[in-house]
Structure formats: structure tokens, C-alpha cells
Length: 190
Ligand SMILES: [Zn+2]
Image (cartoon, rainbow, N blue to C red; front, side):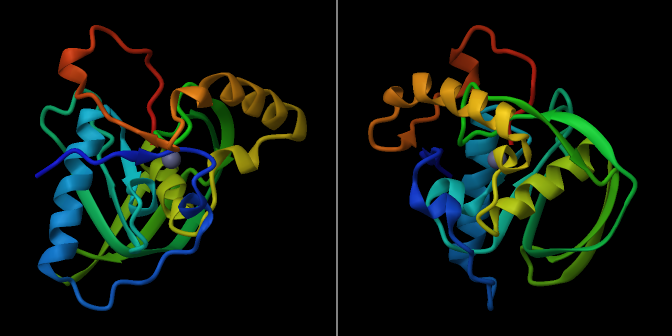
């Protein structure tokens, strides 16, 4: 398994529609493994294939707080089949480091997807998992959390991003595993 580079805001692939996976091949399983490794290294709670430069409709999530035990969920071709309620929560994104914002989303969702063995399954997400699933599925359709911010808040977020983005001249971010970083701020990145 390897830790992949994460594409950051401005990389065209983050705004592109993904392609549904027709057959779950070893290549797709390797992508899933690498995405988990990248997400854990970055201490994120979700990661979508376009964030690592891949066009497949694939995402991984794990909202377990301390990752012990881990609760990994890999979703291929995920679709929200039910959503209800609403919940406001602070979101961040591994592709927009240092930028956070409150987003209102459904408080509960049921998502239908295919697993790494090609089998269909459904997962119910409540609260943080619901937010995370919606955030990741948005990525698979070229949508980012900042799109939901009010004009003023989005402008502030983009100003903040302008100060950061010179750190990523190639529009990619090399993930340094968290074990070698001392401390990090709390909000989850997805
Ligand atoms: Zn994200």
C-alpha cells in the first residue's frame, strides 16, 4: 500500500464527474487500500478518488474518533437512497487544507453502494457519518463543501485558501503521516 498525493483546490479533477465502476478489479481494490492508507496518514475521516487524481466513483470513510478500533467503509458507486432531518456541522477537506466552514446537511442518510468484493450493500449514516458520506459523495460529482457556504463566507474561505495555496504549486499535497507530526487542530478533514 502507498500513501498517495492529494490534489488540492484548483486541480480540475476535483470538479469533474466520476465514472461508475463497472467491474471491481484488483486495480480498484488497490486504489481503495491506498486511499485508506492516505486518509489515515492525513488523519482524515473520508477521502474520494478524485482527491487522489483518480476518475473512479470510489470513496472511503472512517469516522471512528481515535481510529481504535477502526471502522473503515469502502463505497463503490455510492448513491444516497434516503435522507432526512438536518444537521449543521463544521467541515474541512483534505483538498482545501486550513479552510473550514459550517455546512447544513441531512442528519441521516441511507447509502447504497458496492463493496470491494463487488457485492451491493447499504449503510446508514447518522450525524457525523451522515455528513461525511454526503461530503464524499459530493466529491464524486465534482462538488466541494465550500459550494454550500454563503457568498460572504465562501469569499472569506477563498481568501484564506489564497494564503495557503502557494504551498502547493503543483496543486498536489504530499501527505506526511501523522505520526511524525506533533499536533494537529481538531476539526476533521474529509
Ligand atoms: Zn473533501
